[in-house]
Length: 211
Image (tube, rainbow, N blue to C red; front, top):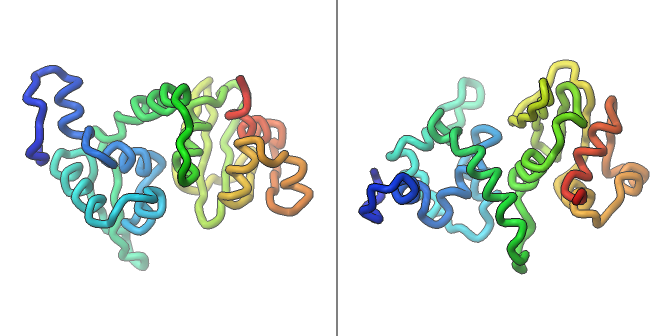
């Protein structure tokens, strides 16, 4: 364990917290669940965290085998951070924590990051209401939603011949998902475009409004 602070408790919960219990550590995992990110992209999703703290957490998570660095192939030649296989096993933990935390008061502060919002949709969406492979183009990001055999997965990337495509920006996506704008209003204003399976993608957008 790279972090010198430890509970000194042999319980598996305590040992897990020895690895991911430091401030910002699990949020770094959250930001990497959909795919690799550059350091600057990580910082953009972790508003309030200093570069030094995030660098320290990345070193600790890398030392513990949760995160690794990788150099993208030319012409990019960009260094990114990604979860290891062991790190990706934290996905159900993060999704369930998100659902569990919905019963706590919402603090004043910055809105959820794009990845946080998408993971909330992932956690609450009914996979039976979607059928196929969808592509969400949100600003410069592109995320694939795979709804197959009653399961739903998300990953950063593009889809070949998607069942449906959604094109929007982050602010519009948040406003629609949180009920501050209707889908029709966003479409008519030109801030949102849905091609293909409109019912499925509209239902996905309204997932967080369902009770």
